[in-house]
Image 1: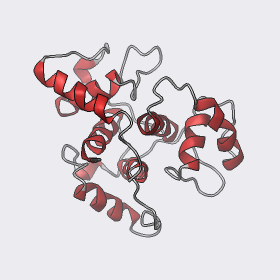
Image 2: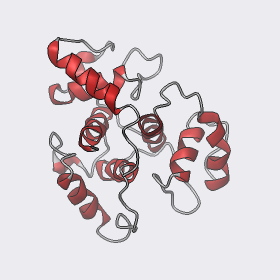
Image 3: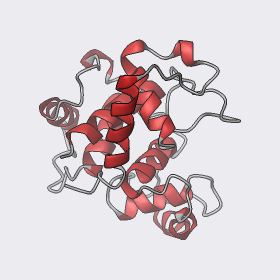
Image 4: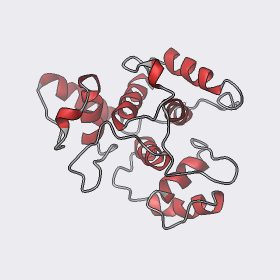
Length: 202
């Protein structure tokens, strides 16, 4: 399995702390977060893996998430670099790999890291960083970060079924309605999937 444990101890410690007290999220739109996703959002935002939108004051839980945003979130959880200290060094790789990514793009470093680690894939030419991901695509990226798809099992006809089946086996979908996986993935849904991925990567 790839190492999702770099900040796992911190995450679990925070989970334990949250279980002992009521802790409000730091966002103006906390009330919009689905109750079943609240723990995931609270933990991952406190760890700065998930960060607010625009000026950071809102989480925008129902907002769909882009491919570039998922790359950023996965980068932070895999590397533990939640301050983005080392992100610039990966930007050129993204620009060389994908025709639609410039080294100066905000998400270039995240995309470069994840592409080099084979966590994300494009179509051979482009990555489409601004394109909304659906639940299956988000799951595929997260599962690759966990070490799956080594034999290209998430490619070809029926890849969505294989992704969903793997996620189900790993208990990543405990709070996810499987019927929504084909639609645009919301920020809170991705937070929940990633949170479950951290918890099972032991």
